[in-house]
Image 1: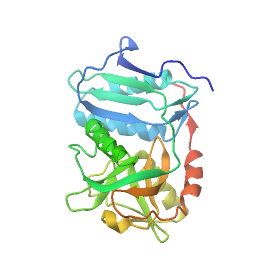
Image 2: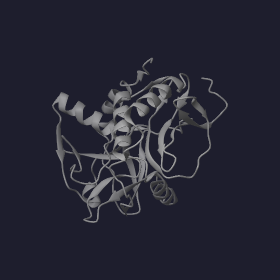
Image 3: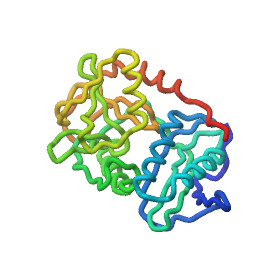
Length: 264
């Protein structure tokens, strides 16, 4: 399928002029949100919208109505063909609302994870945006260890989540995840999975686990780009990935949630 030649572009938004080509000013991101967009279809549109609006509200600016107008214009501006990984942003200092249009990177069905156990470097773990740069550095370190992702570890030694993914695992027939009292991002894909489990009678358990306690289990790293990726290999310590018994069924279900963008 033909895609526009431009691989990436940053657009800044104003109520008066809509989107115009912009340049990154180097200010820290206060809020960011991103997702897979395939031929004008995506998962969890309303969830991403709610999270972005809520996160902007936590920063105290811009006014909610301005963010709603931005989101509507952004939805109209998104491409309807090709595979994209757009990111909406609220930038510190200027308080600019921006849209970063990027082609989607290659998607993978499973993931290699650096199991060295990275201490959580985030300053605002429950809001996506402020810590993207430091998390990108963590992923680069993981890449140097022949891995795609890294697991963040609390000072207590408990697992939290991946550098760009939510972490879930299976214990017998129970779908498990870290307890919500821990500093975790409200992942859209993770929430969709929990809701499906509740609808279909699958037990969901919040459990405190160290990284070593995930040895031999079916572990998933999930996000809005790749969906569900079972861990296929651990690097950095002697751990064995468990067989991916449940992953394919859940991936098929999640792929079926791709819906056309709404027309505003």
